[in-house]
Length: 407
Ligand code: PMP
Ligand code: GLN
Image 1 (cartoon, rainbow, N blue to C red):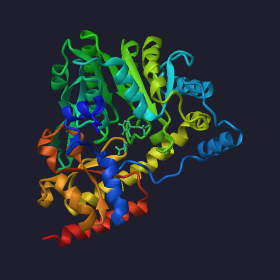
Image 2 (cartoon, rainbow, N blue to C red; image 1 turned 180 degrees about the horizontal axis):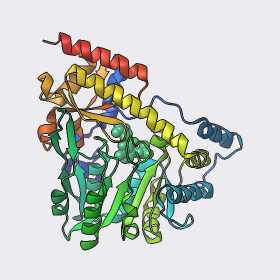
Image 3 (cartoon, helix red, strand yellow; image 1 turned 30 degrees about the vertical axis):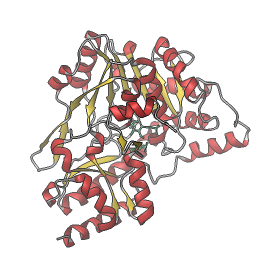
Image 4 (tube, rainbow, N blue to C red; image 1 turned 60 degrees about the vertical axis):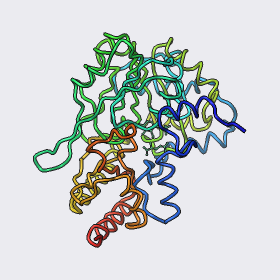
């Protein structure tokens, strides 16, 4: 039986197949490896933390109160109102909860519905590179053409790795074929945040080429220095921007899959048209729970960021003393660490060996590049620090012993 369909053909064209089969994502494969070998998992980005009690209690209450059937396709009013209120309170962005907010099944569905709604075959989509792996898959599925802007790397005065956006390259990636620029700040896999210069360049080029800005902001609250700056707050940007976020990271509920979109009504309508045929509606009892979370005081958001910052410092200091060249991210769950100083030029091969040799799982940064495009990042690994202190400490002990004993 021929099981080839449009997805298989698009994935093959984008180099996303292995031996003719859809390959599992690098996250799924490495988490399976961690489970099989009992290795410590600093690979896939899911936290060891429990959600805030107010969020967990609200979900339990909603289930007990019988909120278990299909919610409205666009999302429960209580959550749409909480999303609009959150955007207003944190960023001064005003959205109509009735027509400018859509609840989705995680940011994953928000991204899928947005790209499928907006990108026609042959349209160009600009992203940074490295990029969250779903982007390439979605662009391929829509028949779009993926244009990337490489992050540049350099060493700072203390020898740490610094990853940056080159604004000249960013502007050069746009053309009149650009339909969407897909921004991700704070950025996965590097924790880089885009500041006003780069955001301004994106907004200007998008306006010049009449492109739509799609911004993936799932790490918006996990910042360790200056607060997140949404591109929709730049003058003139809100009308052409689809902003996407999710409860997964902010409330440590990656398994709940509640995300959302804010955009002008005509964009929300186009995207809802796809969402309704993908999932129709999203997790009923989790919606009031996420609404309760979005209404928490500012200090509760700060507590999680502070706790993550302490774990970022623990992991980056430990990796540095083992001999990796580390980056100290401004936000998010991950640090990029260069294994070249340890004599390891091929992070892909190293990540295959590490679970057995060291009992630790990491993800090669090359998984976030198009095939063969990683260049000097071929020796970089992504380590997650959204894990418990104990897991990070034990991982560092294992890596330290591995580095000392390997021949
Ligand atoms: N975008 C980025 C940058 C991510 O790292 C992730 C994974 N958490 C997602 C989107 C998907 O988010 P969700 O789990 O809400 O579907
Ligand atoms: N966002 C997570 C990461 O980067 C993975 C999510 C997934 O496995 N789809 O690790």
